[in-house]
Image (cartoon, rainbow, N blue to C red; front, side, top):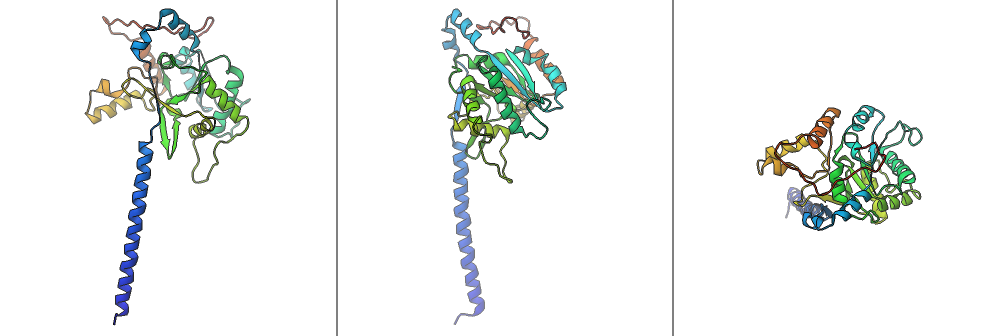
Length: 314
């Protein structure tokens, strides 16, 4: 005859065993799910092949260079005026046109607008005002430094009448999106599709109190609805060219790894953006990218991007 204590002990062992089985099963399911997310392949967009590029005649290169017109959108806050003063005198002069959109744009925003509403209204305004005048639209934060010539080189063989949405890809669950921190590039066709969709709906995803989508995630969802998928921009060696950190931070990371030479391992020599810069560091970057040259080294680019006639930009 089994005592009550024995029965209780047996029941406890049984319940414990069942719990262990379920925990193990759910753990394996969760691990498999995470594995799928990490292994999920997204589009990779690489810089043009140098050999193919050189096969293009000089006349064709000049014609293509004239057709790559980039409108730069600086999306900021009301207190970003001090950044804009520096941006106007540094890298944005290499855009075909650049404008600041912040919460001081009373005709577009009000103080209650969230970041997604600000981004949505900006894109809609830009399309209505400039949609037919530029082939590419580059959106960045005021703390971003961009090398526009490298961006134009990336886009050199791309057709703006096709839907492109590219930059530095981030992942949230099954959603692949271009993080605005590294800069976001839309082709004329992608912006056209986005504007058409936004004219029908203000939100592309339902918000939840415990899980709110950031502005760049909402943008990715909207674009996905109209068949435009995020593409990760890389150089020929697979290195990111849209960077979400300052160059000093990337160098420190590479030095701490001690796995590869700092110069080759840190950053692409065709990088388009670096993020998180102060106005002072923006000026330093401008000097390093456009003015500093090593004596005895001859730089002979096969393509020169010139601003349109009458432009105040460089």
